[in-house]
Image (cartoon, rainbow, N blue to C red):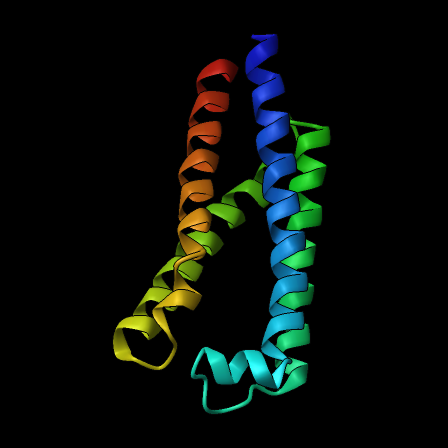
Amino acid sequence: MESRMRYYRWMFLAAAAWNAFAAGAVLFLLTNAEFRMRMEISNPTDPLILQLLASCLFLFGLGYYWVSSALSENHGIVKLGVVGKILVFILFFGHALAGTIPVGLAVPTVVDLLFAVLFLEFLIHWRKEAQ
């Protein structure tokens, strides 16, 4: 049981790091005109929108850190993470398929989908253990 708890702690720490990295990468790369040109993103995004996105990614990462620190608490954050990560995946791939963004921008969201599945497994496991 202890090894399972260690696994979940590391999983949520990895999710926290992924979100913190993603926040920095999105803000840094998408505000860079040369990167947008190379990725063939024609319309520059408003810096405020990118900063708000980066803030949300960072806040979710902070939430995942809190979950890693107390696995029996903050399950609402985990549920939000499942829904949010699935939505991110769907939105990015939807836009890639529609041609509004390059597919290369959508590919990293596969990691979000994987975390959504792992988070869901955590919630199911935790519920079984509580019974």
